[in-house]
Amino acid sequence: MKTIVHKAATRGHANHGWLNTYHTFSFGNYHNPERMNFGVLRVLNDDEVSAGMGFGTHGHSNMEIISIPLEGDLEHKDSMGNTAVIKKGDIQVMSAGSGIQHSEKNKNQNQLVKFLQIWVIPNKVNVTPRYDQITLDGKDTENTFRQIVSPNAEDEGVWIHQDAWFHLGDFDQGKATTHTLKNENNGLYVFVLEGSVSVNEDELSRRDGLGITEAKEVDFKFKTDSKVLLMEVPMAN
Image 1 (cartoon, rainbow, N blue to C red):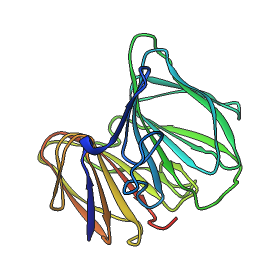
Image 2 (image 1 turned 60 degrees about the vertical axis):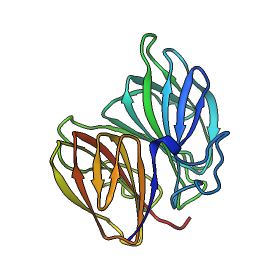
Image 3 (image 1 turned 135 degrees about the vertical axis):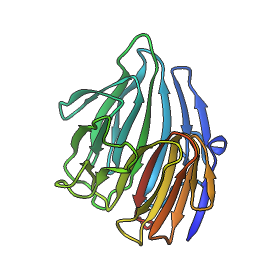
């Protein structure tokens, strides 16, 4: 097993006034040649958008874009005619494919919206753009890693054009579990949203990341109440 630790304080950071954002991997004005990606996981942004503000209409192509709201309400509009508001408990996916225009804004005038913006390099290019979202029940992730992203349309969660699986879990202090990778040739990127977690021999805290390769299983022990996102991805583009 090989590991690489990305402590929260080492992430790139930008505060644009309306947007306060942290970048696990190189993005925008943050460029670190040693932090370009983890396999096909290209972007992991931790965004806070001020009340009533947002990203104006802009384009993407040939990228799988996953949004996970953590707090507040995020309004989405796109060139496919979709208009939606996503909030905590929702998982949104957009396959940009041959090209798409979209905007995202904080729907509320009196509170922040916080969300993860994740980009995964696809295994197919120029596909027909698509949009989907699901809503998790509050109990779906209690003391278990619930699958939220997969390569299969008929499987649990939303699906993307890549052999990748994401899981999300909310664990009580003192709990422990073992996660088995779907494909032992993949890598696993662990991102701690909240809490304090032992992952094999590594100690992680809030917003720390850990990349793991050459592993079939990963052991977790939760030192406090914790919320953890797992992103299993191919290591070769």
